[in-house]
Length: 282
Image: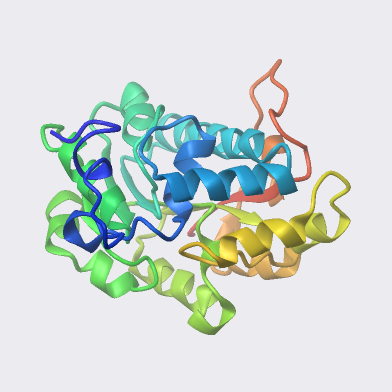
């Protein structure tokens, strides 16, 4: 088993490539996120990039925690409130506390979860850590290729696509450039989903970037541009377009900390950070 801080994460070579051709010289979005959440599955170059993000936006780590908290709330709602028993987490990132399968299976032990990520570190860690768990798999694939994921034999072996599925896209679509057709990508996933399925999204909002009084968003975007993916903040109408063919559930497409917040809790970061919403396919 590959444990945090061991195995592939510590075996670097002078070429800057670890086992499996993992690039240890270029910052990676998933590993930056892991560092911001207090994880150990990251390289020095990722930690340096994360610190540059913190310098540009001081509460970026708090926003990352708020994103994780939204995912927790959304999965709890979908499993306990909506009765969903199948989940696909696109761009899942490195394993951390309160993973989707842990949250879902607390209320629904029969819930099945597919994690998808295109980063080899994420895939190797996920496959090792989940090797002996029932009803949970990790697929190494690019979320921009819906057919290859939804037709993947492991996915078809675990999920019944004639039944509702919750598609989770938290902090992932704003790393898909316009030229890749992100709205068409989500529409293709939608067409694979049965009636009664759900789509959950968090996404960087261009308005928040333009009006941010607390940080240098331009510097933050520059950090991401030197990493494995570039940040693409979008307008509210552009974010809402991802829900074409879905009915947004209450409270709609809102600032992330305000989506069904738990009573007595306050956001760790700013209120105006990412947009969040959950929609149901009729």
